[in-house]
Image (tube, rainbow, N blue to C red; front, side, top):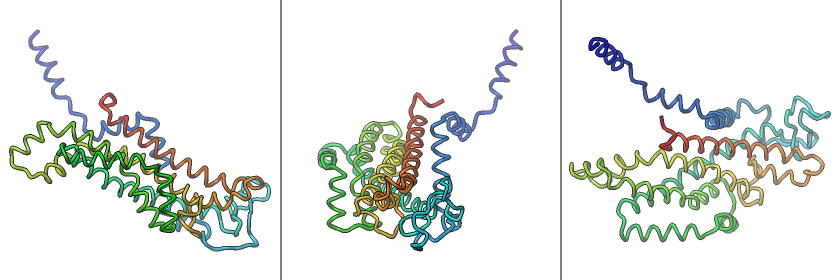
Length: 302
C-alpha cells in the first residue's frame, strides 16, 4: 500500500509546471471580449501602418469632377472608389486609412503624456504621504473640478488647432485617472515586505520607486491607459468636428464628419463611414481595457 502511495506521489510531483506564458494565453483565449477587441485593434493598427500601400489613391488629391461618388454598395458606386469620394473628390477609403493614423497617434501620444504626469504624481503622493500627499491630492481635486471638454475648447481656440497642439493639450488634461489609480495602489504596497526589504538593503528611494514599486502597479496603469486612449480619440474627434482640432486637409475622422454634415440628409454615408470607424476603434480599445482589467483582477486569475 505504501509503495502505491509513493508511486502516486512521485507521479504527481513529476508533472511539469505550466509556463506563465501559457496560463496568460489560456486566459486571453478564454476572454471573448478581450480576444475580439484585440483582433479589431490589431487590424486597425496594421491598416494605419500600411496605409501608404493599402490606400488606392492619394488622400489629399482633389478631383471635383469625381465629387460625391457613392460607395460600392450603391447603384452608382464604382470599384475605383470603394467607399466613394467626398465633396472635393478625394477618395474616402484612402482618407479613412490615413485618418486611422491620426486617431491612433493622438490616442497613444496623449495617453503616454498623461500617464507620465499622473503616474509620477500618484506614486509620489502614495509613497511619501503627509504634506506631499496633501499637496498632490489638492492638485488632483483641482483638476477633477475642471470640465475637460470646456477647457480643451477654450485652450484650442486660444492657441489654434493642430495635431501637435491637440496631443499636448489632451496629454495635459487627462492625467487625473492615472494619478488616482497610482496613488491608491502605491498606498497599498508601500508597507509591503519587498519594499521593507529593499529599504533594509540600503536601496535608494528612486530605485525603490522605479524598480520595485512601479512594476507592481503597471498592470493597473495599462488598463487606465487603454481607457484614456479611447477618451483622447473621442475628444480629438469632437475638437476636429468643431474646427479647432486637426486642421484640413488632414484626414481626421472627426473632420471628415464635420465636412460631410451638410450632406447628411442626401448622402448619409459621408458621415456614417467615419462615424462607424470611430465607434469601432473606441469599442475595440474599451474591449481590450475591460479584458485586461478582468485578467488582472484577483478573482479572474487562475
